[in-house]
Length: 374
Image (cartoon, rainbow, N blue to C red):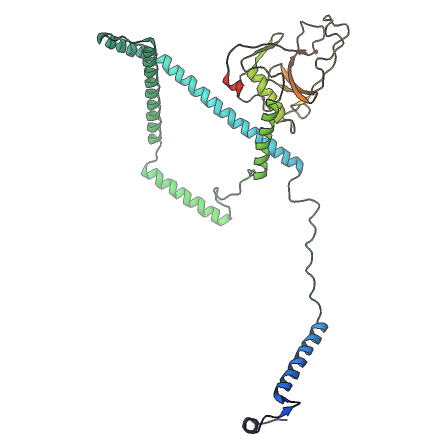
């Protein structure tokens, strides 16, 4: 059925007039309009409830697929390898700092020796001047004058080296034409990279694996643990002690460094040879029963089995997996819940079997070393 717009407007106006003109009807003591509105609200609510009950429940979100058997995380073996490499890198840096310090000290000593004539001349001039004033220099003042003259010679040499390097850098600077050619070459290379889609060297993905915070923390923990074990180890010689087995000799500092390294690399042994990585199990085999030294015949060199580590003399950080080492070894072992260390080596003069191991003899140097008291 179709109604025109005018007819609808007329009907609406009429109804509006009737409603407002007549008194509001009552339904059981209430306004019929209120009852109708309440009934309409109840019907609307019931209708919403029915619709909600008929509506399909929303589909549950799919659980994320289980990770593949090959996890993106590194395996424990690769993590151990990264930690071991981090330890070696830290030791290398430590060794480089010590070597640089020694090199600088040796160079300064050489400069002072070369300037010995001038230093002596300056000191004699200072003596003559003081004597002329009637106040001759004391031995302490003479030493101070010598030290001052030596420092001036070192400073003069450093300034000369700096001036030589500055001149070398200035001579290596490019001329305006060379700079122009260089810029043109850079522009050409940039255009070639743009055509081929090759990234610039500065933006290329680095192949060097970054060290995570966890790995750095693990490296730090290894060093702290090794230091604590070293402090609780019994049998450590003083740094200036002299240790020897037959003709082989070493000092206490090298022994302490090897013991520290043995604890440091115990979880991930190091070395190029896969079957001879350090530290390794020590062959604590007994001496022959017919050994000429009856006090050790048929006995083992050590009361307990342990791990051996090579001693490297005159090294800032000892053996770190490469390079030649001496014939002596430190062997760490546990006895009655405490860590012990001994130095062992071969001595053919003491027995017929050249593979026998003998405990080193130790001669301590009576000298105050404040580092040992720390």
